[in-house]
Length: 420
Ligand SMILES: [Zn+2]
Ligand SMILES: [Zn+2]
Image (cartoon, rainbow, N blue to C red; front, side, top):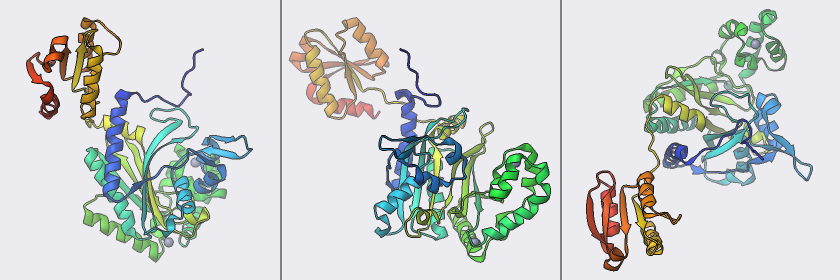
């Protein structure tokens, strides 16, 4: 029997995990400093949640979801993204009665049946935030400020913030009318998908990647020219706040979201590093989502970013992430002191040190080799004599220098040299 991991999934081994932890721990720390609390929602939900909360016309829902019938005959789907499930949890747990805004962050894996390409997985991880309850542009600014702090502390410097507005249900119809007028005379020269999008939702034409469609997309009108006074005011307030925060942005006239519950602010962080250009993080406002899922109307803003994509970017930009920590000490023993070595290891670990000893009943020589391989900073030889005198010889593996330390001083000695 030879079973491999499913296509599009991958194992993350301990060596790589230390890079993940560096990014995840930094993200959690930044979120907590901004007053966000972590949320985890179920890995699978009723299919209906995503059909409504992600949008029945999106590629995610139409082609990419892992949907199955459970033993009770209910249609379930592995979560393809975070926002719908978190909005469901917000409603179901009565979080609307908490002081606003309710600030939530997450670090979860998601599932999409995607085409295979570099950096894309069918189970992938995202970090994200959702901020419920504020319709103010200052909430948008704070969410972006949080991201700016995260990227700054990560030292991911080759990045650019793209900023746009997609209006609201009041001003979008005018824009869609303008889009139709623009595309209609050119439809014959555009791809078949775009002809279909023209009928269903002309906004989605702006997402088309077909080369032949690009000239018509580039010359299309921008929602920014069709904002109602409230949407224009919201966008201006956001820009003023970002200016005051010293966060640079580029006004992007062609950002779109194809679904009605996305409103006003849209933003994206893109890499400016040669060779890895592209989006690292996307976000925006979704004032219509909670109501559409059956809650009372609740403005909201948030973002998500893929961890795998982020780590590729971190590597491409030459950012050093801390490697896995090496043990403080390796204890080498003899057959008659092996159990005492385990007891000493246990005491030292409980005082906060990283300590290893042999549990393979290896020969003395093989244990020495193992001590070297472990990368430990110190080695301790535990013989019967050392044990009876309670006085140990510590060998520094980097240079072979030795020092005699009493059992009582062992912990403080190792902790102190650990800081050198
Ligand atoms: Zn508007
Ligand atoms: Zn097209």
